[in-house]
Length: 252
Image 1 (cartoon, rainbow, N blue to C red):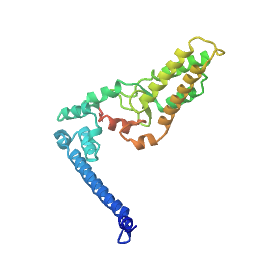
Image 2: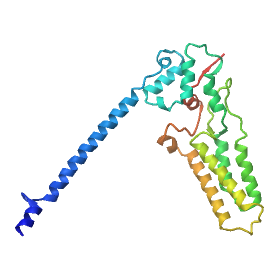
Image 3: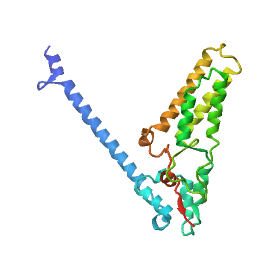
Image 4: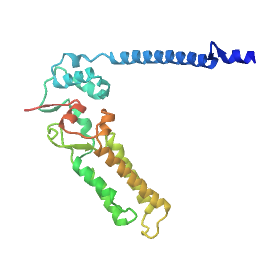
């Protein structure tokens, strides 16, 4: 009995208490070491050298990229855009957008006005895809989004006061692709069978389609999507567009 009491108690405190305290101090020490290592790694990443063009140039584009670096966002600028901006150092700015590469990239993708996208998503969410006419209307609505011309070009500035979404760039682009994929699944599952001959697979395909539409609607209409990840832009106006792609506009 005396031996068991000595094992369970030392100076009025259980041995388990001392063992716990020792483990706690060791864990705190290890956590502190990990935090210090993470801080050192972050410091090394943040000391990346800014390209000379971004430091010495009076070009508005390079100045904007230098500001982006100072704000810790340099890594968010695509490399091809950084290269284009660096190569434009000392070059005269033509009328329109520059550098040319920076406008070619977004110009290659599809864009649609915000109000048109929201209206299309609202229409898609109300379709009963078990019916052939409704499936055809849904396909026409979705395909119609991709027929809008880009609101900008090398010599056409992004319209002031307008809001657009990219139908292909993330994070909204993958939502649109999912809608298209789920609609294809519905079309393949239903075929030309009439409404009365439905099964579980058809209903499941329709439900998946509506879920994809709901996700896209949430992404397009919720400000939290950008707040959580500012690097993944959902809505574009003139300021956001030109900043995102490192563009500067020069009047004639």
